Image (cartoon, rainbow, N blue to C red; front, top):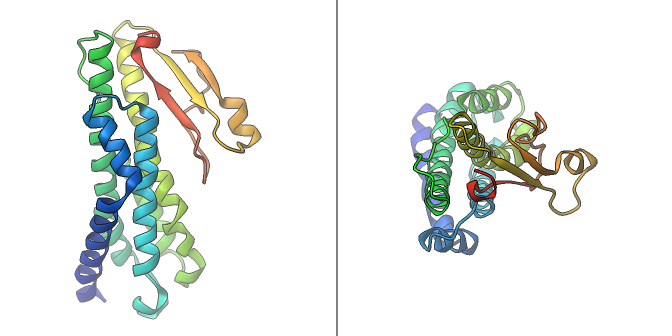
Length: 222
């Protein structure tokens, strides 16, 4: 299977590129970014779109029958998930950095946009969980919603990095979290608008299938 991993990864990357190129959701977000009108809500839409595409491609290309003994061994999981999730991080963090740059300029703030660090621990944890199962069929769901959730988290991490940076610089950031759709009680409880330092400790966290939006615009209290 080692010799097959590069071919499998190439297939994943090719299909991912084709689907991202055709995605209307991504095109809409990128148009707003190009027009310097994008917000973190757009970044969230972009991240969900990127995550959904990767999850879809992984679901089609990685099946028990193409894995040795029907198992996704650590070596395979590491070589597939590290580069694909790194790519998702790169795409989304670039988007958020441009969003924050525009927001800073619009608010008259001469601070550099902060780019969040890659959360390698989350990737490592996913690799460990996927490779720890004897039967891939039992854990194939881990390559679906958790992939989207990870990609969304890049936006949340970007907001936190910039809010903390602005707070440390003596500004007064205001963070907003909006419950989306039929939100659960936990999401409803954490939703709201908060001054920096008064926000709930879980404001940046999200459970699986959570599409709630965390937003920050320095004009609202920077």
